[in-house]
Amino acid sequence: MKVRKAFACGFLVLAAALVADAKSQGATPARCVAGKLYGLGTQKLAYYAEVKAVATAYRQPGAGAFANFGRVNANRVPTVLGVRGAVVGPDCLPRWLRVQLPRRPNGVTGYVSAGDVELGAVATRISVDLSARRLALYDHGREVLDATVAVGAPSTPSPTGSFYVNQKLRADPRGPFGPGALGVSAFSPVLTGWTQGGPIAIHGTNDPSSIGRAASNGCIRLPNAIFARVYALAATGTPVVIRA
Image (cartoon, rainbow, N blue to C red; front, side):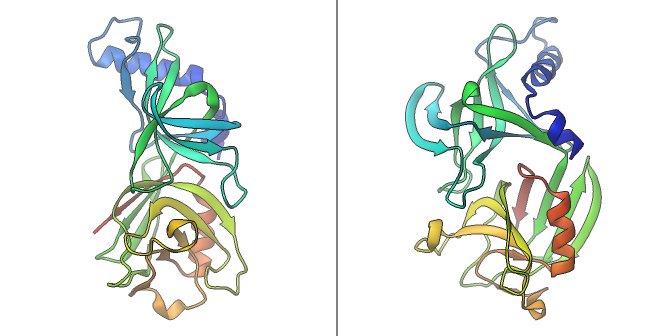
């Protein structure tokens, strides 16, 4: 996506956005406030961070380390964190990023040093309505796709909350995931003993009869042809909101 590429090293652009946010909040007109945490992301644009080599997550900037992330994850694809805010310096450049992490508990956040990651942005957004069994994909705030999905069975429900696409994986089109999967930074609330902790994904299926039903182990299933469109449009870092 053009937005994603344009922001691959976008700290200066982000700084400009933070200055604008500072102005809107009544801060010094030409500058942001050093040391302040600014929220990031809108309905049309979201940020993500790709780990360069190693990134340590802290409970507060520089204090209370509780997790480390390497350049690639267990599936050997780049480690991506969902950016939710930035703590800036006097030059309005981020010093620390508040990020959502792809680990339990669902939705957990921490702080990583801005120097340990590359910043990017995406203009896509995914919304999943479990009760309606529908998935909607938005691009720059405009709905571009709406489809019926299969959701978690009563015994293995899909988690709810605000997450993000943390990885894109290819699969055997004849297998249970169809042509691939969009890994989501969420985990099954019940399948804690599964490989990699029971991660949730949006994927295709070799059981099209399950579409429209509560039939999965917590993942969101789409018909393969529709999933291929979602896979092509939704970049890594795309926000995913799953609601009951």
